[in-house]
Length: 252
Image (cartoon, rainbow, N blue to C red; front, side, top):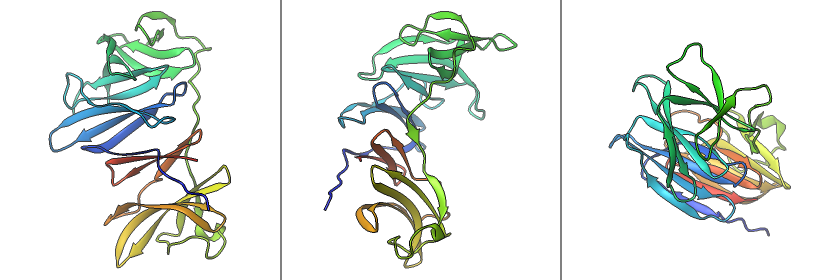
């Protein structure tokens, strides 16, 4: 029987809010928010080796900051203009391996990550004019061109299916909502579903080979409503969040 074991199982001191993966290095940077302390921090993990490069990294702004993207070993962060709005301002770049600050620019904001680098704009100018920047130095290289297409990635999200699409008896728990999220990868089928146990709503994940269950975990319990998809796949790494505060990475 195949034995599947997590490469990473790491608990954080707050809610995992966002994850960004570097397509070139397979390093994942995690944004963690502690609502009680009004503190946001960041961590960096290697999805191939399981190494945790750093955690509890903080910017000068305790709360109104977040992650934009990770590319070519560099993590980009932003500030928020207002606590009640989504508009971003400023760019802070750090080394995704050791959290050393590389550069910052408080006149520009991040628009998207292109195949040639980050696309940015000056927040004081209207209409918005897009520019290509060097992710290592922050230097503006030139104006945005049609060739600066968004950078593709290897992240795969699960599909949605009704239980009727599965062989009767295949799913190892009684469904709530008759909906499952699933992916097929390397002869495995990854399934997340909701089930009731003693009247308590729970969310589970299963990894199966045919009808044989090779791995299972309880993601959430005592929840009030059905949760969104519980996992993503990046190349051969299954990544999921448990109890909103723990990251599990499983090689498949």
